[in-house]
Image (cartoon, rainbow, N blue to C red; front, side, top):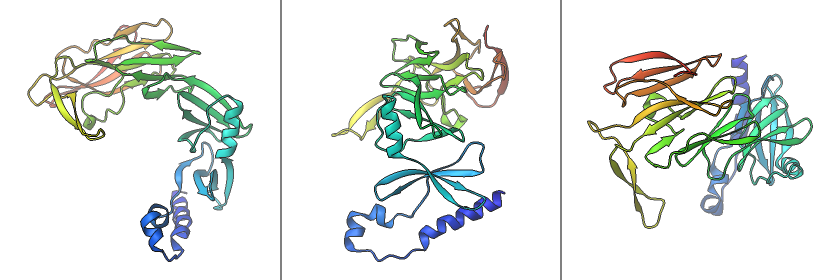
Length: 302
């Protein structure tokens, strides 16, 4: 099956490259991106529970979501940006200028973010529904396994939206204490700071205390003229950030911090929930990076 899919995609894409065209000077100078860039399938992904792929096609000023049947190679338009915006308008959801980055929840439903809203759209009924909300200025969005709850950060504090309401999980005024962000080093594979439990009842999160870390100047080239921005950066041999892992319960709105012990500047990696939410597993690595321990923690007691 994989071989057939690969061959089909190669043949499908090769048709876009086989055409010949003579370019004018205007094409090359003013319109080179559209005239010289190779054709491609935008937002290509598998449709849930189907032997088909979807992609976004832009043609003659229209943006259309299409589906490819991998058995026979046929394509079918299933949703245009115009149709999507019409449904969003009926649901009092802001219109989109571009087709959103979306995720298939099922063969008939997609999920996407529109500004501060998490939206589900049913392609069978053409109905859009707001399932969760975020606050202005949010970052580090994490969607719960049920695709109905969300958590996010604003500056250095952590928030969530669940059961139709907002929760402020942390209340740290000191900018040197950061919640819900990535920590340590990206080389460890840490790409987020918020971890929803499998049954959506708890939120585990990193709490990073970097008040003891020295400032380091970074040149910000996005301003004119360029400006110096100070960031916390632990130089080799100097004091590093101290990280702990909190577990917040939506039911009692309390946070328990896991007893990860000392030294406080060790690395908490590979955070993983057990399937029944009773335990959390952490691979703890010392700062010398020569001793790794996998430890199981009780999520309720720490």
